[in-house]
Length: 368
Ligand code: AMP
Ligand code: MG
Image 1 (cartoon, protein in one colour):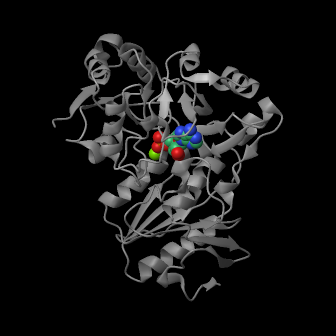
Image 2 (cartoon, protein in one colour):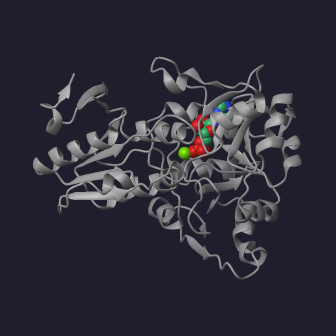
């Protein structure tokens, strides 16, 4: 299949530029498009055959349900058998925006979308391109992230094409995504709100609105199964093995690990904060990516930088962790998965093993 690419022109009216993409969506084809979080792989969310094409294109396990995207607040009423007061409060506070709500599903929704669950995930994005496309398609759009299953999510059209060229009908290029990590998923069907996936709307922001919110234990404890089916899969993984360095001296730990990896002859990818990058030695074997100097910048850059390491064919990757507060919770959820939970803790001049494997080049340094 030839994949069409629509380059949107900022200073021309948006609606006419999306007619072809929307027509293909309405006709049951799969089209990728930008949102404020990451690029989505869209299809008509009420057409089971169209939704099956999403699973085929991504190589997505059939037990991992899709998020339905809407272009107006009230559109959720066609998709649910009823909203709890919790859901209404959250919609009022954070929609349109990077928040997905789990609600009781209505009979209209095909089983393929919800993977047989009696709940459905719904999001009202703020991105003008996403909203106009959904409006023109005239149907809720099912859209998981536009990557092959297991890879980091794409945050620009070139990264979508890397995974999907020749496989889907088209890609709408609306530039780079603002937030860079996927939406916060909140289950609103029980007595208390539960965050199933951390994202751009932070735990702190939700707590402020609701007074309290729980974090799904499956996100933090290894022996609990996460309640969002997709969260149990290996995800965001670059090709090379990655180690993540966390703790109060993460920056120092990253510099030390990078020096050791480079000295052992490995082509070493480093993803670190700006302050750390400034102190890394220069070497043709050290491929250094600057994640930025704030949590917002790190979230925005994270997936693009991880995907770049694949193209640069590094042997090993070292990542710098941040605190689990604010946007840091969403970032660390992604980074820990990218690293396959190979994590070291840097404190008091020492590197300790927190979980997973210790890379060979650090075996003599790490306190087990
Ligand atoms: P993605 O589309 O890549 O952003 O992934 C969507 C995420 O939403 C996956 O982790 C799904 O398992 C999760 N999800 C979708 N529908 C539901 C649902 N009804 N209940 C819980 N999690 C869901
Ligand atoms: Mg995804």
